[in-house]
Length: 232
Length: 70
Image (tube, rainbow over the protein chains, first blue to last red):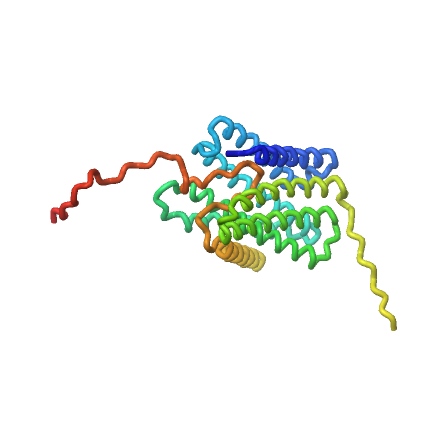
């Protein structure tokens, strides 16, 4: 049963995701951050589809369950491509675009093969298990990739505020969801709390990206820290 | 060639790290699924509380099972 809070969060999330795309169109970075906007646009469409199925069949219906998990896999793949786009932006000056593409595609192929190896002995609902397994594994791959990108930002002394803001928000989003999942398994009696945290995180991510697109332009840089005057 | 090799090694490293992290996070798990996209209400997993029809058991009745004919 979905209460008023659930509906409010759902509507708010969808509206904020649409706002990210609109802001991106009006502020100009649509092409540069195409994969991020693709993820948000697909998320809006998926939300609309989920609402359509939900209102016709209900939360516990097999139609909604299958639509939800299959569309979740599509969104996770889009999120992976969004990360790919961020890597391309961060490493654009190093001229390693081709190597980066090879790396990301190998990782994607490796993840799909690994997922298949996990579920290939399942006797029932093999395709569904495979889709869910890919989604799960890609999610954790995305989590690791975000932290690697974060480390690369620090190593390269990246100062573009918008890029930093987007990567940090993505890192927080991944971490909140993974942390919530771990805590939910550890403390199952607080299931109600853990059920709502990912939804709130789903609202946080578009807000952070709207902030990044509206507040900063692409050339905005972090001011260097004041140099410490060392007395001689 | 070395570029391709380094890309493969890096991809394997990230994949290993991600699967290790997944193992840590899903320890004590009840086979529920981590869903993290969008704000739509989360349904039960398809194989935990699914609504697909349950097939009949391959044997019928409660009579004692006879020995195999051979």
